[in-house]
Length: 196
Image (cartoon, rainbow, N blue to C red):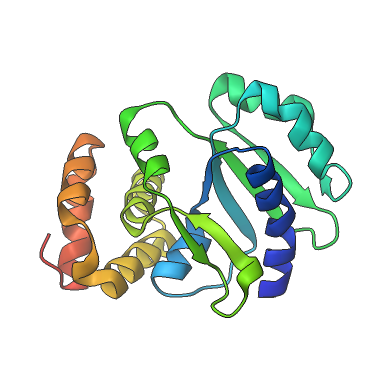
């Protein structure tokens, strides 16, 4: 998959979220590539604070260009889970996770950053998870996967190494403790040569 495919698949979704005032951020490997070591990815992960009253407008905005199921959206909202969209032209899959209402996830949503996915492309402006929240999210996924995913771990180390001392270590320590992944955060710092 080429980067233009990813942008082509993301742009209408981002535009619809913006038009409908749906708070969101891009996480996953797209965000870890933006802040750390770039790698190819076959899909996109978004976190969105989607309300039930916005579903019909979102479906109407996307149904011509995506495989989209309204029932999957409403179920995802009700169960605080996820749904996916498939961009018909590129077949890129976009996983949309519902923003959880707990303190950490609301903090992550509030800390999202606006940036360009492509430096010289003003049409590639999106909201990304902060580098700290990319690390915390990937540490959680790594933990949930029984700590075996080398890809997740390399993504984490890439962000820690590239961002280095610019990271908000106080925030990372506080939330890694609250989320039960402090040992992984300390390990990532040790392997990346960073003092936690």
